[in-house]
Length: 415
Ligand code: GDP
Ligand code: MN
Image (cartoon, rainbow, N blue to C red):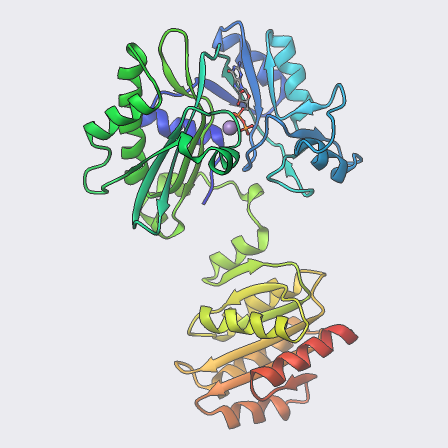
């Protein structure tokens, strides 16, 4: 699960991590007011979307050329004058209002969003800082060492992927013991690696320790501060933050789970999650309804092997009862890209005839119009297939995965 920058900064601040102060706003008027309330000479107005690269990104209206915008946001094309960036420095309430106006309800295109972009519904107005140094700090779970690893670099503000590629020696790593958090000696090593001195050294140590503590306590899967800045006064502050959380741990953190922004999530994926289905939207035209993640993966592979493109990954789990199948059908058929549907279910926990009856009930209730290929395997498979074949509905039955894939690919190509 991802959250917005302003939400992340609130959580970090509560955990004792120093962040740039700011206020989230939804209108240009609120932005002007926020500027006055913050009482600073320089402020920064930032589009709140679940994507990075906003500083170089472009806010565009509905008629703008998206591919062109993406080329500019990725640095492949020169930036014309007057295009609105996703992050803008302002020096008066009026400028804050204008900046917010240039962002609100626009689509932000960054190198991370692709041509689809992300709609801007909210902006963060934050206290602007004179930056003495821009650093990078990131925490991610490293599967190879089976622990979180803290990465720090003096090369902040730029894309860290580039640093990792060109000058990997500039990224300092500390493996975190989850039982301890960041040990004092590790915090001192980081201070040295980042060349923090005087008050910045002390502030840095506190920042690193609280940041790691927050990561562990809130079941983060990724936390990135880019840039982490050092001010002239030696303050160490998060100017930006990107936090991702482990979905499977969110039951432990209802306060964090409540921060989900439905506008940023795929509507079908949200709906599927509410019904206990694992659903991932893909680009193809063959919808799949499968029980079990392993079977779903192999079904997708076999479809591709036979020249088709899966429209989704959908795992209805072990049960596959009528209500689940019905909801799954609704989600699959909601997309106008889908040309054919393949149901591939193994009747182990539930018998195949029970599944066939559930399929037929769902089929009738939803008024199914697309070609539907069904392959069942497992207990009572003969009875199940017989039910489908004698049902009088336009259902194509298949025997074995290859047969099923060939039939559904042919059906999608001819429909
Ligand atoms: P991102 O592009 O989505 O990662 O957004 P950031 O929050 O990292 O902002 C992009 C860039 O804007 C930063 O790398 C800074 O260079 C600049 N920026 C953001 N806030 C301030 C600020 O308070 N003062 C100054 N001088 N620059 C800022
Ligand atoms: Mn950033």
